[in-house]
Length: 330
Ligand SMILES: NC(=O)c1ccc[n+]([C@@H]2O[C@H](COP(=O)([O-])OP(=O)(O)OC[C@H]3O[C@@H](n4cnc5c(N)ncnc54)[C@H](OP(=O)(O)O)[C@@H]3O)[C@@H](O)[C@H]2O)c1
Image (cartoon, rainbow, N blue to C red; front, side):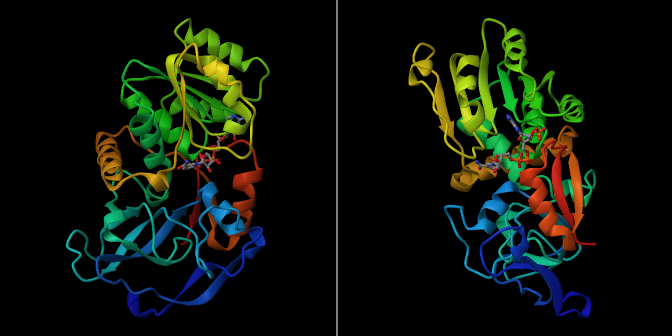
């Protein structure tokens, strides 16, 4: 048992709905790690937009209720279940998935979704790695076939996945363009790997991107809001260019003819559909990036656990992303 404790604070969702259904409870029994599982004392948990879709009940996969959201935690190992040899009590770790939920003071994760957290990163940065960096790598290389010397446009670069995509693409030798909706966002994108950054709120920003890309065009677009941008993305592409749809919040009309002359592709991305081998490759590249020093998550707004409903409102409704939003447990 964790330092004599047998209950903890954790957020529970008892019914699907708006942010108000996130209920902070103070008397939740501490989870017990089973075979191949790790019990983690959570210091910080990244908040991802998908957790708001799941909470509202509109996501394709619905969890059993009551449900505790949160997959990307960083903290310290409190105990391990049978057969776990890779971690021990006291290790600093981050996760790509939890079993009992990350919006809590303690969580359990399957050992194969737990990774060592380098001393180079603090817990908030550790909580910003999981879904954003794995998604960015998966979209760029495993589905987008991006290569050094190509040009990538990270359309929506100031948030969790966008900053990750800029850092990774820069480290792998691509020419990196990013967009943000505020001047602070543009600065952050430029500090995190983009060679050039554009304001997607400005009327002429697509013309500016076209000019910067030259006659060749953009090889890969990493798209965070396809329902707004997909038709324009097709105009920006090079011959053989690819649009990777990472985020979309509704329908859009496109002209299929815009894909024909350039033989361009549009591909949807879902990290949840990545294979075990793909995830292993993502993890190896991400851990190598931390070791080399170029992978440094930008942490944005921070919220105490009791402010979780506010955080869920803000991640969807407050424009002007500035890195990864995190929940703090202590
Ligand atoms: N497919 C997957 O497996 C997967 C995995 C992770 C995330 N996602 C999805 O990807 C999207 C981004 O996730 P995130 O965690 O990075 O969210 P986030 O941190 O909230 O960032 C959202 C980003 O979208 C930008 N944006 C806003 N309006 C835009 C516009 N008109 N054109 C282009 N970009 C615009 C924001 O820029 P400003 O705020 O500066 O305007 C910000 O950079 C979400 O829809 C999320 O659900 C999908």
